[in-house]
Image (tube, rainbow over all chains, first blue to last red; front, top):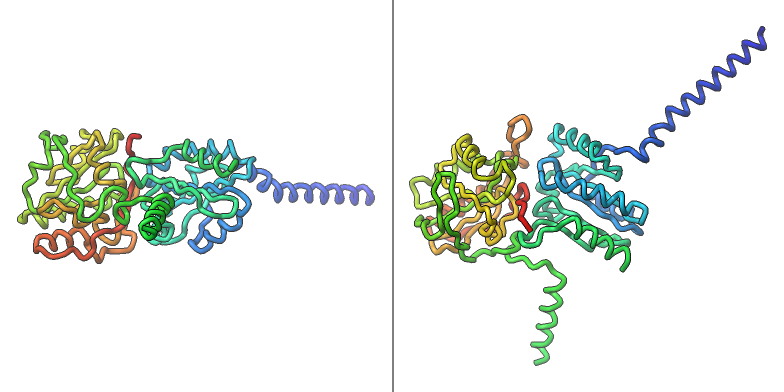
Length: 180
Length: 210
């Protein structure tokens, strides 16, 4: 009787441990295929973060919920990410909604989940005008593409009315850096 | 001869590696450039307007987009600006270039009525004027003097405002302390030089048809 009780106790402990391990592991196993929420980042952290990706081509999509052109173009980035994710091309989104506008931040995370954008997402945790000045941006959408050495090689923007970028420009830039 | 060749090489290299911008923040237009001509652009008034019909000394052109929260954020201040100079020889003209349904003429009329625009609001369907101005964001201001030379371009003031989803308006850097457009107009009316000629306009991007 005592031996049977001890066996049940061991079985119960074993089950509990397996269950706890399951709880711990599951989020990480899901994370690989799910959309992570945006990570707040400062301008100085951003520069360091870019250096972390040296050795890869990095495609950065600058966007915000207030930018309808960005929202319209975002599916193109998801498509390109899915196409090039196995070729040392890292896609990153940088959200430029006002850090004090919590409603937009919630909407942005929801939007990314809806888009099934499984790459890394950042939110610039800085004053908006300072961010545009420091990143030398006139407007968004803007796509910045860095080579394997961390150098900005392409800056695709809408700054010139006669030369607005398209999805093909983004892909051509990636191909140029991949096969140069 | 050697110096000329060196200058030519430097110019060539510079032009290939640097983005070619006319102004500091504008790819097409620079301070001192002439007003691009426009012909028979339809206005919310039901009439059309051409550049040679504008007789006021100062002309303020502003690119707008009804849907843009940065336009909605400063709409009230734009109307105030118009009111402030109504007894002076100043003409304010709004301009919409996007082809979205909520940015074209019928929607422009409704927006202007709701906000109380008391100036012409033109629809630049061909986007020719927008391109000639190098207007890539909304709102973006262009101030021309009586000779129709550009004396200011950029933001309305130093703290752009955005309308949030709940209708509240928030300036990025608190209440504006420098009113660039107003200051440029006052300077021009007094035949004085404009202190700040160009700033970085902040707002939504204009969608140009390629």
